[in-house]
Length: 356
Image (tube, rainbow, N blue to C red; front, side):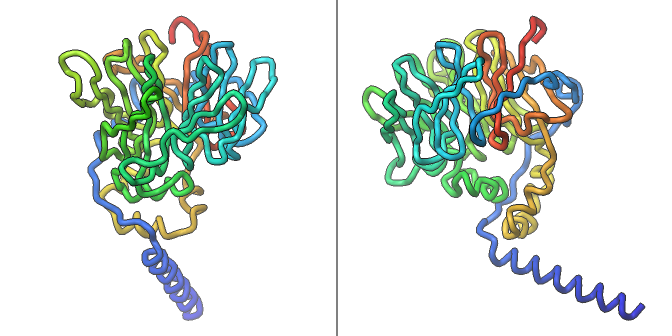
């Protein structure tokens, strides 16, 4: 018994040392924050199997975080190794170029170029010949640390997110743990080169989508499960409000189908970070531990949701088996949902029916 007690004592002492080291080495300065109401996965967000019939299409690489629909029916996506690829339903894959960074949000243009939010290099243009132009990598002397997603207006204004001014893509979990609230919404004019900041103080700024007639622009705040709106036209021009609130899951990218629906991708449930919101010391310790510790606590999850033009839930689609894990983007193209994932080596295709 004494031997067992001694072993337990040594074990506890060792564990305490590990936690103390993690606390000291932690790179974050965590802030207390108050999560919005979390309704849980009930009613419209109840678990279902509507995504279970997703067709998986392999890509020659890893991490097709966003998938843009091109005019010829193909899909364009960026991979972890910097490549931007074009995929066809037939299985043909073309490499359009390599940004030399980490392409995430992107949009294929009619002239054959691709506008890219590169999480390492900033806002880029990938030209048809495979060369890249840096459009914006700093604002007012401060680097655009984590360009994340974008949408482009008819007159050439690129609306894009800078997820965090504290941590880049390789350390994005640290921003979630710190709650730095340094995300922002920027715009870049393709015609004049003017760069403007429109919204700051966001808790990991992410997906961006223009609304009908470009009357407003939406930007996702990942950790809170909240979607903010900035009015661009009409009597409310310049005003900001909340378009969607109280999702039970984090929100990544958002897209507009051009008619009546906004689609939102959710890579993870909210409850874990919600539970840590008022525990900054614990978050500091977690941030000081090896990354595999926090990654090992993640559970497979797959969810996309549709909202109407007033931000009201239409439907939520789930796959309990998460065959395409951690969906980070969803775009509606030609009667199909095209899904991307930061952690997958493929994209997902879901046929829509009249009820969705």
